[in-house]
Image 1 (spheres, rainbow, N blue to C red):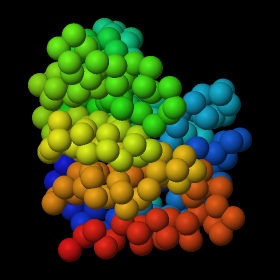
Image 2: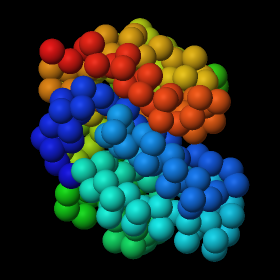
Image 3: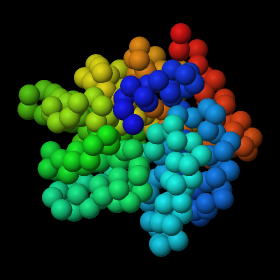
Image 4: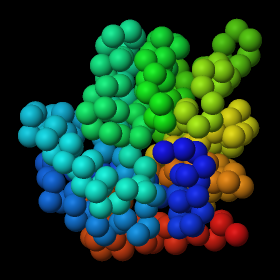
Length: 253
């Protein structure tokens, strides 16, 4: 899916909601129910592959069937494999084949720690995206990500500055957590025309309105991921997704 197509879906729905399919134990029927209820309000789905890997072969089958279900029923939705891979050479290439060929995801999350060598194999697949971890929402993210380098520049800013040269804005986007509003603003300044995938809204305390103010561009260029606050909502996934999307819609003219 191209950047233009994804932004068109966002504008049409007036929503940048990405639903995290993090269900334990994994269940195809539960995933189908979540997808069917949230599809009118979401533009993307993001299964965290750890939940499926931990269930062994049955988990992998569930993940494959979940992707096939979305592709057949809701083909306009963007699919992200939240795998956080980070290796080089043939290993990275096999990871890319797994998620781009075997399962037909649109994007996969990747760690930048090993540099361009860990990203290049994913870029061999046309019309597929790499989502690079740059500034996450977990409490210990500051151990490394905001550390200042000799030049006085934060590590995450150096990652963005360097990665901006690796691929265009229709192939590479960045992850930045929703729990640090001012930091989101700084990431957007460093990547003014890149898509941002923003987790941390809902259970982790991130604020939808703050994220929209700091991260949304005129075109859109933003995916806000919500997982537990939707899939575990006592009101049901559909009602929760509708509520989150409703908070996003005023930011679209």
